[in-house]
Image (cartoon, rainbow, N blue to C red):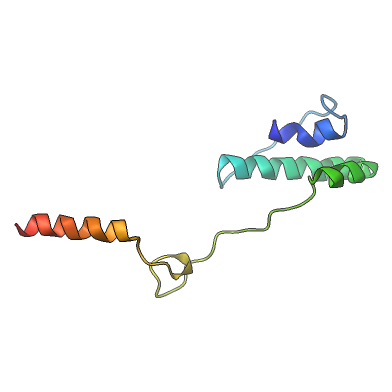
Length: 98
C-alpha cells in the first residue's frame, strides 16, 4: 500500500500508530501527501532514517499546483472551450431554431 511504504522501507511497520486527516485533491494526491508526511515524521523522530527514506524517494515533494484563473479568460491558462462543446452548443441552437 502506498501509505505504508516509508514504514516498510525503514522496518518500522507496526511500531507506530498513525492518525491523519487530509482534504482536497484526489485519492492519489492525498495518499502521496500522507506518505510524504509519514516520511517527514519518521525523520523527525529518528534522524538516522533519513538515508533510507531519501533512497526510497519518500522525501521528494511534488510541487505542482493548479494554475490560477486569469481575468478576461474563460479558463485557467487561457484555454478556449473544446470543439465538441462548441459543436453541441451549435446543434442545440439549430434544433431550437427549427
